[in-house]
Image (cartoon, rainbow, N blue to C red; front, side, top):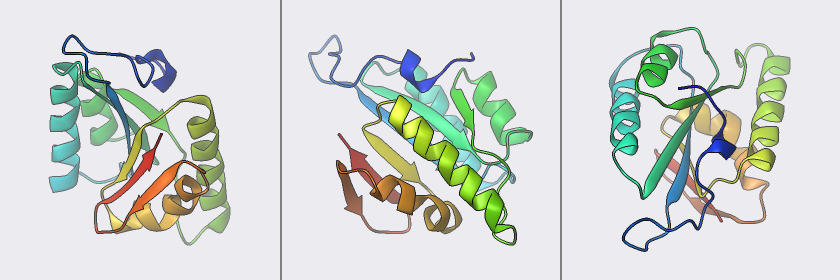
Length: 144
């Protein structure tokens, strides 16, 4: 399934039970495949069965197993661009792409499951006036 985050039901839409659906954006590197990546793919599969939870993914590296498996699971995958800390311009470009994505697509929560993605992208998410900060190894930003 291809599409954009804005194609998902808008935050505040009610599920059959009357609860508001949560829209989550998982921000990750996407160039390796291990435990975090396996969990992301599992979440993508689970989100398709839940009317109260909608997951989309933003990856830096779009040509790998993670992106392929997420798309196979029917998830929306956004490409932020190959990002390397040794090339600061690639980081600036990826941050700019994430900033545009967050402006164009309402998100309730951004989740960065690694310190690498947190270090690069938390400053962009925290720019939002509606962001709540949940510190920890798994970084979550509530954006409502």
